Length: 86
Image (cartoon, rainbow, N blue to C red; front, side, top):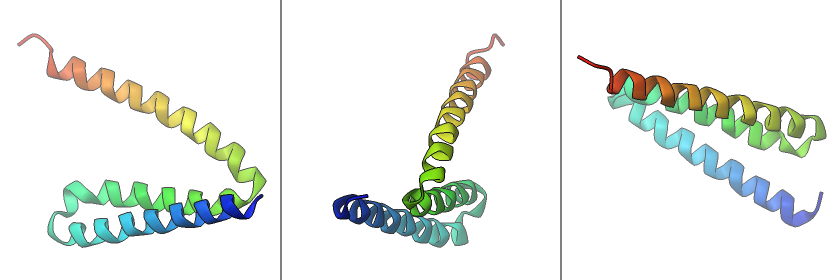
């Protein structure tokens, strides 16, 4: 891995840490809304940090596919719930 890629990954990890820190501060006031976001950003921070290892890259790509499928299902369910006949 090149030095530039390591620098980029380090900066991405710092940005994710900033997201965790901001989320933790928001959780104190509105924990029910922000807690899932804090947990998700914390997991992303860990995955970004672990991208230095080759095995994690394959796991990250696989997880990305599953998250996209779950997100699509959630959007479909939300639209069905939102626009259901009354």
